[in-house]
Image (tube, rainbow, N blue to C red):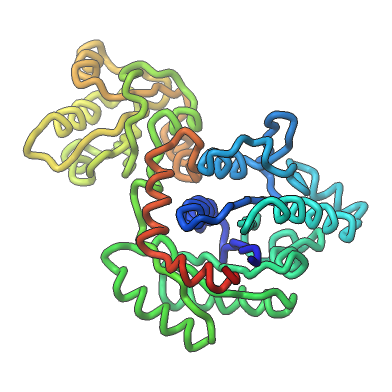
Length: 363
């Protein structure tokens, strides 16, 4: 079978989620699956191997030890790209990618290859996704963000780049479509892409469980000290709010499983959130709180926090800084994150035409 090359119209469109879901679906159909991320920045040392974080994750999902992974062909930690550009040997770099792929291809029925980002990323080294896909004989599957006009336009742009590099585009999966717009988006993008001669293999609705970090993961990013609810750090965050406005206004913005980011000296806001969480009449629940400025709430407020046992993290940074760090972070799936891994299996199984993909690859 041909390898399948997963590449995005943008970064963070869900390529690794698709890798996990497809690998699981392929295995369910009796295929022996290998995985390769030939270029990447998040390098991980494991059992004497240098692999990408995503390769470690996919190995876990496949039940394979990391030692079965090929070493990452081109690790790109900070500063490495500049060094390579200064002394560029694209042929040598490409050969390393080919060697890694060939080693895996000899051991598996099909190899899933995941690009670093969009089709052009790596061009500075002569190793764009299109260049690599062409050289290993892979069929590229584009992952696009849900939308209509802009989605079709970006797919057209990416397909033009692939064609210019003589790489094969097998089709598209449209991902992260808002559920309330799902039918419209699916219908319009499927037809719009068909008008361009491009096949759609699936349309996946946005799934909160895939995008929801735990409070433990949030804490790892924002830092600070856990001052309550240490045993509840597995709580998942579905929404977030900066609770800096007056309580009667703030309370209107609270939703299910909300992370509240608030100055630690705004006791009235903190108490309002606690009361809303405890009220049976409110459609709101606290996932956790981040209190900023290094200000610890009053003893009375702390007693209320401890009574409902929600995770609370105290940070020294100001509210804007903490909220910006949280908002700018893409919380990747981790190997121990079984809930999100199962969600990846489910959304691909339910929304992607896996049989058609296997057929297209020659299976």
